[in-house]
Image (tube, one colour):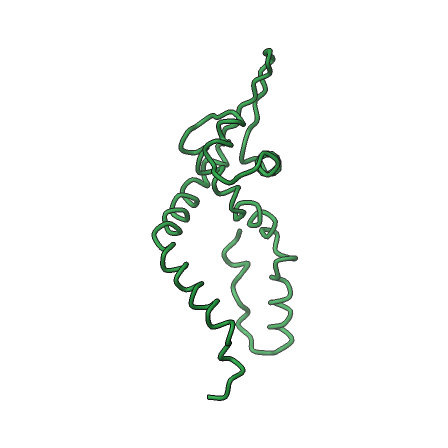
Length: 147
């Protein structure tokens, strides 16, 4: 995406600001659909595993990604293939053999996905603690209580 496309206007007129923000909502942003795909947790894992392992069969991918159902892996792989991030190769054998690998475009995401996964692992305990604090506060949420 062009970095200038998200530069705020150098005006302060309310109408101009509203027009700028309205043009950059997720529904109007051309990259929103792509971000939904590559930001999906199963897509992140599939890209990471294929990037590390190279070519894998469906069953091997399923074994390596814990908690992922066959149906969700199928949906994820189809979406990644549609976006040109994964290539599916079917071999005319009995029984049929199908393998999946990252395309050159998909491989470019490894540099994004790896650090994201590393970050999530490094900060997992902090996030879990924050969730516990939030959930505990939510029961007696302080937002409506007088100071």
